[in-house]
Length: 150
Image 1 (cartoon, rainbow, N blue to C red):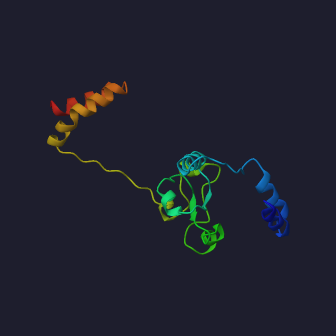
Image 2: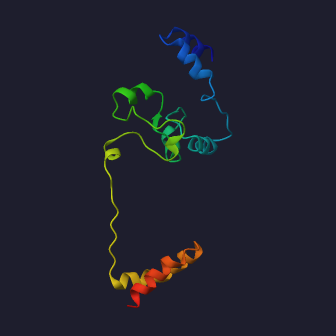
Image 3: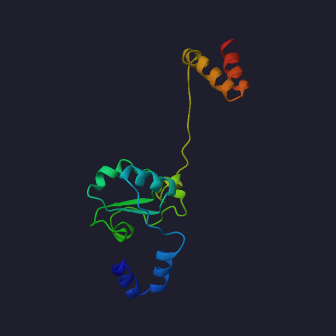
C-alpha cells in the first residue's frame, strides 16, 4: 500500500492516478479461493486484468470476461498496450462481459448461411416444433411442418 502511494505520487499524472486508485471503479477484493476470484472478475468484466498468483496459467482457463489478461509479474499492462500485440482499444465499463477489443474482425460483417435438404429438415422437425412451442412461437414450428407436407 505504501509503495503504491509512493509511486503514484511521483508520476507525471499523480492526480489522475490518485483518482483511479481511490475512485468507484477501483477495488481490492479478498476472496476465499481462486474460483470465486474468477467469478467476480467475469461478473465485473474488467478492461485490463492482471493475474498475480502462484500459477496464473491455471486460473486463465476460468477467466472469460476481460478485455486483456496479463499473466504473472513480467506481463504488465503497458506491455500489452504498446508492444506485445494485444490491443490498446479495449472494452470499458464492464463491456468485456460481452465484447472484445478492437481488431480486424470488428470491421467484418459475418453472415450465417443455412442450407438443409428435405431429409435433414424432416429429421430436425420434431426438435424445431418442440422448441417453438416452448417459446410460445408455434408458427415457427408450423412453417417447418408446412414445408414438409407440400
